[in-house]
Amino acid sequence: MSKIAIVIFDDFTDLDLFLMWDLLNRVKVEGWSVRILGTKATHLSKTGMSIETHGPISDANDADAVMFVSGSGTRKCIVDNEWISQFDLDPRRQLIGSICSGALILAKLGLLDGLTATTYPTVKASLESFGVEVVERPFVAHGNIATAGGCLAQQYLISWVVENLADKTWSDIILKSIQPVGEGLFFEDAEQLTKLYAPQISAKTA
Amino acid sequence: MSKIAIVIFDDFTDLDLFLMWDLLNRVKVEGWSVRILGTKATHLSKTGMSIETHGPISDANDADAVMFVSGSGTRKCIVDNEWISQFDLDPRRQLIGSICSGALILAKLGLLDGLTATTYPTVKASLESFGVEVVERPFVAHGNIATAGGCLAQQYLISWVVENLADKTWSDIILKSIQPVGEGLFFEDAEQLTKLYAPQISAKTA
Image (cartoon, rainbow over all chains, first blue to last red; front, side, top):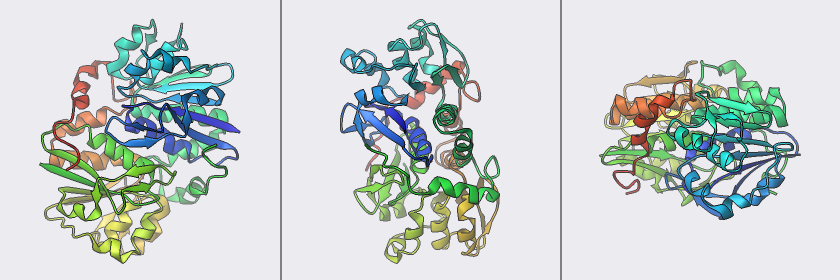
């Protein structure tokens, strides 16, 4: 069993949910489960899309991997003590990661204390205000805690999760599957790709 | 006014809608409008996400740019004569593009007759069955018709639309805004990025 939780909130960045969500759902391994968690049945993205959640944010506490997305909504999350207090995450037993301003939530939870991290350029100063040393890199991992900066850097984060919870073969093929044709993905890869589009082995929602 | 239509259907590839949708919504130009069109109030993505549409597919006929997403659902679209017959597109007055298997719809509409095109590796043979010469490239444009292959090749397609309907400055900054930090996007870009996150100048939906 590998349970992956993606935490969203109102005003999240659309692409930062959907790149992760789509790619993580391409892994077809028995017991692999990806769920979107929130405080409401639906959350509104930054562009106004209504996206359904699969469970409450407290379900993140039992997941094998917990991913925090980004968006202007993170600024409200980190000053909402009731929201923050629902998390009881533990990097000794969970992979915990963020894309862009999701790093603010990791910082607020104390998970980046004494660590370096990365984030979106417009978020650097806010993240530094938590005492975090912010480095200009796409992906920074310290043990089971990782931050990524810039939407497409989700590829590093996804690869890290999939290598840890499935294997490098799955990680390589799902990342290859989204590359531009002729630039990382080739017509001769067609047969190898079919395993990504097989029916899901287990239900995605509990 | 620049009206962009993104056509979806059941079983579309999540990332192929959301990369386009998110990035096109970052352009803040007066009269810029991006709408998702379908035959129902909501369509289910390949992973089972319910996504709201903003209008019927026939609205594509009045758009300045019409983008077809991909996914296994395209196979049903191209054999559904009622669905196909609702389009009255014209490359003399519209930009028309596709990502991955969306090219099958362009082919079915006769828009690729005599042209080269690209698509997803697993779709090559199907596209060739329409008499289209399929080339192993991320992006192929002939005048106002363009095809892209591999999810991340949407970047070329989006760039083409934004350069044509807005300008290269907007195209450059929205593409830069999603690159990994340290690999195309840098902390010094923070101020330049803020214009992407300003409120929308006009309503997104008509």
